[in-house]
Image (cartoon, rainbow, N blue to C red):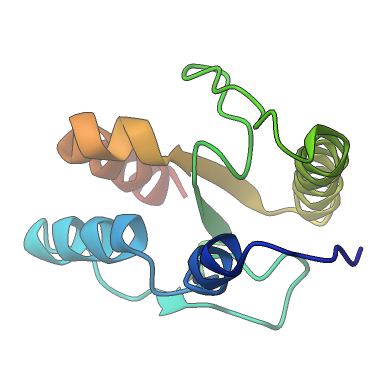
Length: 138
């Protein structure tokens, strides 16, 4: 999907969005480490979807989703008015891809955890406890 960006400021901001090593991911990893939860790999590329954190032996894949980019159901953020058609297509495509990845991983026997940016900001301990309890169950 290619879009011609005429506004230099928008172009600069969009290029600044990272796909890995984001602030929410780093926060999650710090809290995991502080809780003594080890043994994970980051940005694991050997399975579909490239999860942000993977516990290979436990077959747990953790995705840290940004609320805007993955259409968080709690935040219900608005689609930008400018270039609305592009954004609708982009965000819908992201949601559809996330669903395909989730279904494929679960079918292959993986436990998939989605950590939303807003939940992580508000209560990182709760998100880590959720992951920790899954690790203990397996």
